Amino acid sequence: MKITFSVVFFNLIIFTTTAVATDIIYDSAGNKLLRGLPYYILPLLRGTGGGLTVSQNTKDSCPLNVTQESFEINHGVPFIFNPIILDEEFIRGSYPTLIEADVQNPCHGSNIWKVSTAVLTKNDDDDDDDDDAHFRDHKDHDKKKKDDDDKKDVTPVSIVTTGGEFNKPESCFQIVENDMMPGLQSYQIQYCPFKCGSSSSVLTCYNVGLISDADGKKYLAPTDTIFPVVFTNSFGSVKSAKTLTTFSQLSAKVTSFSRSAK
Image: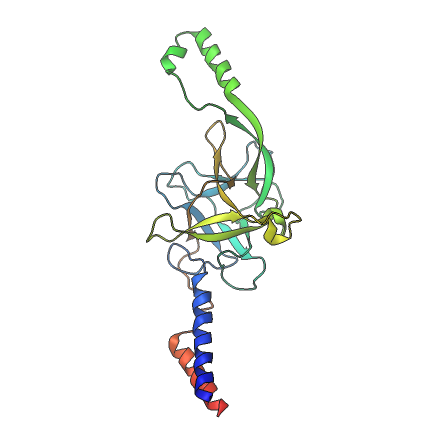
């Protein structure tokens, strides 16, 4: 009976340890994503732009928008992750997480991510005609400009900005593993308001991807598409302060437990 109980106890420890190990988020160096430390958020696919950053549409516009750098060589700005429910030193997948920009905020407000409604100028039709045919003289130039303005649609959309609050539906995000390219560990950020006390009965998480305005500037926003990302630390190589229990340590615990049960 003692042997059976010890085996069950040992299997329980192994199962718990394995379950814990599978849902931890890792950075691009293979280290656990740690709470409270800054990381760049970069696209998985090369040639699709740089890292995420924060920006203003005009000098005095607030809050800051979360946008993407145009050039791949630009990593953007660092962001900090903090678990909303779990009091742990690392970030787990599918758990509500607070994300905030690690920058000086000219708006003097919160740097926490928030889904807000904004007005962006978007093109209804991105197909361009032969430019030479439109610029033969000033008259054609003015006509081209008017046609372009008519194509633009000023529409309220949901985008990710700063100005959020801890454990509020509009600031509730999670990270899930993405298997777009097998062999390359990447993740998808999702917006999950129901996990932070939303009054809505809709239990849905939305992918967070990129949308563009008429000038080609890319904004982070809840979308139907995926935006696979990786996290690169901006503070040098580190290891998590909390490591998983090794097999030898588990064996020692079980042996000690068995002896005490005799």
